[in-house]
Length: 368
Ligand SMILES: Nc1ncnc2c1ncn2[C@@H]1O[C@H](COP(=O)(O)OP(=O)(O)OP(=O)(O)O)[C@@H](O)[C@H]1O
Image (cartoon, rainbow, N blue to C red):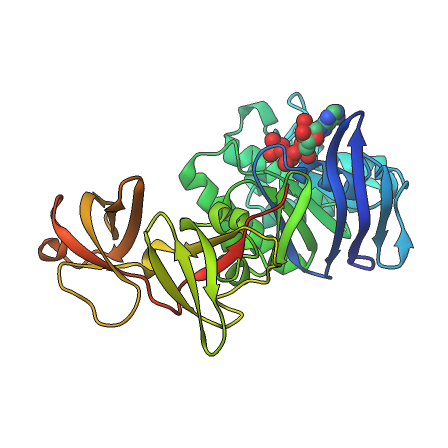
């Protein structure tokens, strides 16, 4: 297994008539990596996955597995295992027959088929269910059959297309852990498609964020969250406060920007962590995560402190979100861990908001 498991996409474009589903995509997925395609509906994730699987061929560009050109190799000759969103199981067959199907197609003898299917059913904890009809299984069990069916052929690459979207929240958590366990155990290069940012952040080695058929950023979960390259990535992954700003002055260790919505200037540390790359013509946005925004009835010392009024306090158990009206039309949200009722701010209270200079990120507006 895993003889050929590096996936290299170069300058891939896929058009369906006039619709450009994917444009100019370059990606290198490393051996054994858990790599996620993340983005909103219609951004081209599934189309890209299908080009890796061979269900679609690109209009332009090259797909390679290691050094081998796979661009127009049919799916059955790629040795990829795929789990579809709706599982695509055979309902009239048993669990065993479903999982054995790919081995039968590959003409494996009966004894070896039995060994391999039994082994993989143990791995997904379904060995007690081998003789059950698939239609008699729960959603989570069916999902595991689909996973077993993809793994049993010992694929070089495992492709998962929103495999958890039909499950309830609790089962989804369980299955996330299960998929990761199997992926690590088999050390299999995996591409995972999801529109769920929490799933992407918690599971992936690296993530590619898509929008409008273009890859916006590739990075580890912490890079994507802490150093988004543009406003789309900053807003799509996690919560953020996003305001248009213009540059006032640079130089030295700080830069100053002006926010019209705030009616004030904001200083930011001049580091790559705080300031994304941008060009002269780019429109700029300031992004600050709610957990970095400090809200207090007491005045703070230092820069970037602004007055506001508490509009709303939202209690979620572990955290408390405080929405502060700064100016007409501008509300900032600050999130703090729950420190007990005495710390909750009152609606209507006059407060100060501090935006720490080392917690702000300046990003360009994403091009379309
Ligand atoms: N077979 C097809 N024929 C025509 N247009 C298509 C086809 N498949 C996808 N598209 C279009 O290509 C774009 C990208 O679709 P794709 O399914 O790859 O997005 P996605 O990010 O996977 O979305 P979702 O999460 O909703 O599945 C969309 O505009 C879609 O309508």
